[in-house]
Length: 82
Image (tube, rainbow, N blue to C red; front, side, top):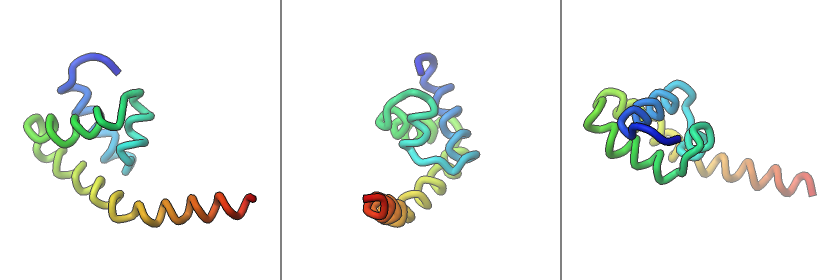
């Protein structure tokens, strides 16, 4: 996704809060890298829209706390098929 980085940061922040999306899911939805998403929502969004930044940070913190559960579920699913 090319264009204005500030506008992209706001759009990514709104997407993450609306869908409870991970950085990886947001990157796939917007067609950019995980590094770009992380940079936009952690650095650019902080100065552009501080309230949206706080909401995104809360979603990402929840995702980080739950990631070991998602990883365990993926491993379980992988070995049940085989």
